[in-house]
Length: 151
Image 1 (tube, rainbow, N blue to C red):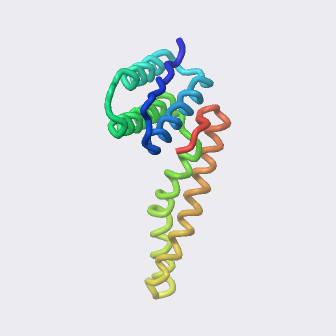
Image 2: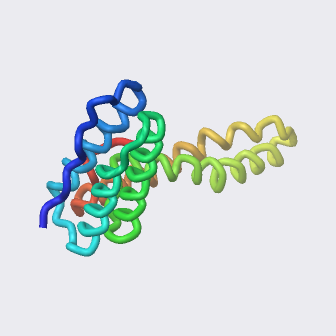
Image 3: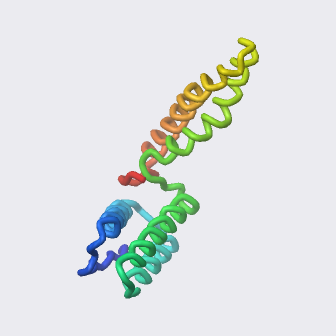
């Protein structure tokens, strides 16, 4: 079974909608190169068909494009563990700052008896998070579970 293509609209004048349309086309191109099970492919095709059938103004179309794009990415992450480039790096950046950086900063602040040093932990935690996320991104790429798109 083949992946449905997104129909071009003649009246996409808004730059944001045009950019989102191009991102969506790039997602579909990237998905066509992957081996996707038919159940997931059917779901994606149904969402693309629904998007092709709606006739709304460009602002509402942009909103529908963005929603469908995000829904497809969530489906791929949940069902197949397929993620875009730098997905884990971006996710772990925030996790590293909150779960590693703040405790390290508090430890520095308490050890030096000056809580002004709490900010030192944030870049340390951010670095740890980026390193963990980059490792997970490399693993996903080696396993072929990474799409050729950026968020």
